Structures are given as structure tokens and as C-alpha cells.
Amino acid sequence: MKRIFASLAAVGFVFVLPGTVAGTAAASSLPKTESVIAIFEGHQLRLAESWGEATACISDQDEARCYRTGGELRKAEGLDELSLGILAACGTNLVLFSGTAYSGSQLYLSARGQFIGLSAYGFDNITSSYQVGACSARFYEGGGGSTQYPGSTSAGTWSSTMVSGWDNRISTVYIL
Image (cartoon, rainbow, N blue to C red; front, side):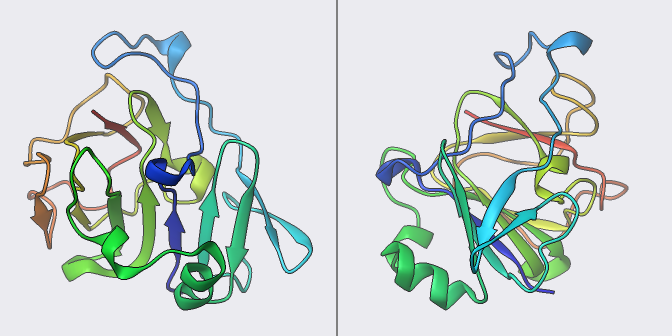
């Protein structure tokens, strides 16, 4: 199932998971992994468990909303194609894909300065390709501060595959 999870800091859409400053994480400060709860057609979804018939979700600090299609989400949320390109001042998202060559489920993230546990989004250990937005990112196997992904995750980097041995191993991200 193709899924999109979008959060745009430029317009105030971010979901904040508590964490620590990069490089200072300890076992007690790993990101929380509770499921993000979203509203889809008047019903609640626990995203870590199932997206149901939803294929696109967006979240801010107060709520998450899901839609049947990415087009429906972009229309309802007032997003356009420009929000997907590289813009100034970290105005674009980190996008993780479950399939190689930018295919499969998509998770859009923009919350900066904290570790983001992917299990809360139902996206733990499934990243196979990625597009880094206007801000550099760090990827980790396990919690923040654990084994860091060795591939390039600088601002504007796109990779249609993961570095050898790293397919489906990313559990946590940190957007600088």
C-alpha cells in the first residue's frame, strides 16, 4: 500500500517526539515509540498498527489527519508540488520510501532537532530509498545515538538504494 506521511514545518505542521540533541543520546533518552493516533474519515487510526484504507497522512503537534490518497491530502491541506522540491531554509521534508527507486510507502518528516522514532509511524526497519530535503539528516539503526547509517544524508541527497547491508535497518532519524 502506498502511504504518504507529510509534515511541513514551514506552515506549522510537525509531530514532535521527545528526544535529545544529536550525539548525546543515552538509553533513557531514546524517542518514544507509542503509536501516532490519526483521524481518518471520522475514525481513529493507530499508525504503528495499521493505516487501514488511508494512504496519506499529515500531522502537527496537536493532531494527525489521514486521507485516501496523496492528492486528496494535498488538496485538503493546501499543499502543492513546490513543497516537494528543494527550497531555502529547510523548507522541504526528509522522505523515506519502503521500496527501492523511491517506490512503495512514503513517510514525509520535517521536525528538526530531535530523534524521531519510526516505529510510532509504522515505518521501523522498512526504509529502502530516501530523499533528503533542504536540511541534512542522520539515520540510525536502533535508537538515536546508536549505529549511524554510513551513506550520504547531506541536504539535497537522493539515494535510490541504501548502502550495502543497510536495506530495511533504519529505526530512528534526526533532521539537523
